[in-house]
Length: 354
Image 1 (cartoon, rainbow, N blue to C red):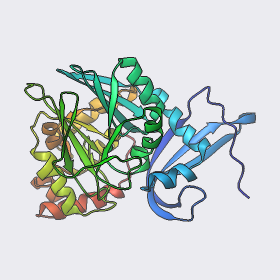
Image 2 (cartoon, one colour; image 1 turned 90 degrees about the vertical axis):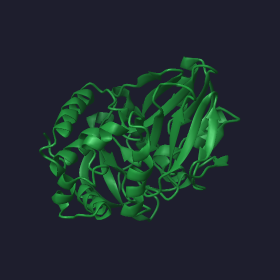
Image 3 (cartoon, rainbow, N blue to C red; image 1 turned 90 degrees about the horizontal axis):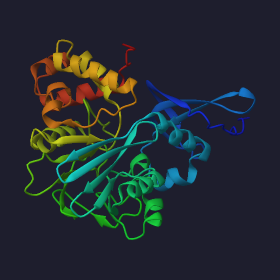
């Protein structure tokens, strides 16, 4: 018989450890469904100093499935873990971007147009935190930009539109909750005076959209919000796509953006990604330097975003699949087959401690 959920004392935020192994687990506690998911172990001290351990998997499911079946106590563990992570505000001329830590390693992003005081939120999985941040800045939230339908990105949409009626919710997939405007490749929209271009990047999910945000006439670099397609030094798993699709997304869509474009990704995976990149190219000094920097940031609880497109070409193995050093690592000569091979290797990579 399984034990009842513990009554949690949250005076001290629980710590979460991301295991490097991938396991087959049963999803959502009450749902008889299996999938291949990265397992996260969460331990927290309950009553009588009993240590309870939960195993949580980030299943690529519909928002509805997770919202109705996920354990509230377990979700609470994820929400409180963000206490140790710091936000960061980057000013890009008239555009301001605040990275908001969410869940265990997610990022939400508040994008503010300083000229009109209008704002958009990218992947608002923690709606109350979004509302509080909007009030702090004294801006009007008008827009939700959803990169894809997975619950840890779209799971807060329906609550947020109740808290802030009248929001426009954009996305490229009918599985996205509270969707009001479905977009396709090169669709455009406005957030105040900011221009937003939608970039279709199917692979992690079939309807994945990245959002390129710029201020017309500004000399400041644009910002691209890449969800689970492009990470700092990595890319998302190929849940609903192929190596050819990820190659096109990384090299032919995102890779052709201006080199100084700032990259805001959906998760804080940078240290682990760079350790894999170091494994692929041990002589690459750009990887070594970025890893040392990322470790320092991680130890301080500070974000490693944003990077730039130009930087990614120096240390991200999934954007370097045309480089001989990366191809030689997997014994391939074609960039698409190299993409497939290194993604497979990354899926089973055991992250070293150092």
